[in-house]
Image (cartoon, rainbow, N blue to C red; front, side, top):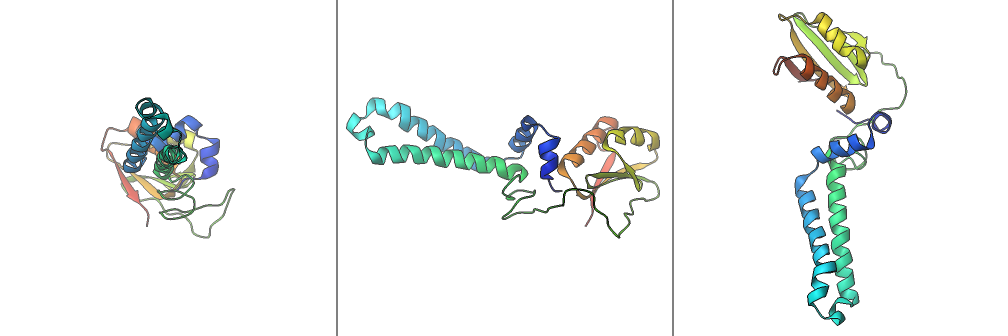
Amino acid sequence: MYTKLTLLAGKLTMRATILEAWKKRLVGWFNIGLIFLVAFIALFWVLPRFLPKKKTRSKRYAKLTLAALAIGLLLMLLSLLSGIGFGFGIGKGSGFGKGKGSAVGIGEGTTDKQQQYKNEGELDIAITGCTVYIDEEEIPIDKVSDHVLKKYKDSLKVVLIDAYSDYAIYTRVEAILNDLLPKGKYEIRKEN
């Protein structure tokens, strides 16, 4: 899955983006960042009450205090950014640098390869980029639940196929399936 920056900027609110980053943050970096922030608070507010003013007014003490703040904030920011891969590409998303990132162009594109997402006895829901296919038929995201309800029968096996999908679209379709079907009633596959 990849995150399309224009979709994040346009469809998700800032609150939703921050919540997504919070859920997927790198906890170790975040906790170390919190430790540095606690050290900053101790250096800035607590220790000056007990140490002599000559000691707390020195350049070395000021640099140590600001370094604790800077390192703490940097580690917390890196933790959140790497959580959804938004910006640096350290996580699973788009961006630059180390990680499993990929990118797409903005706008409509064409491909020579016809998508084949239909198997007998299965209701195949494939997501390619920002497009949702239900048994090879392109469906708008707001009509997915209607089509699934119309085509789903108890004898059918529902399969959600991640064919290099957009993260936001994939999670919306997954939420729709979780609402419509009982737990464990659909299978998740990844296209190679």
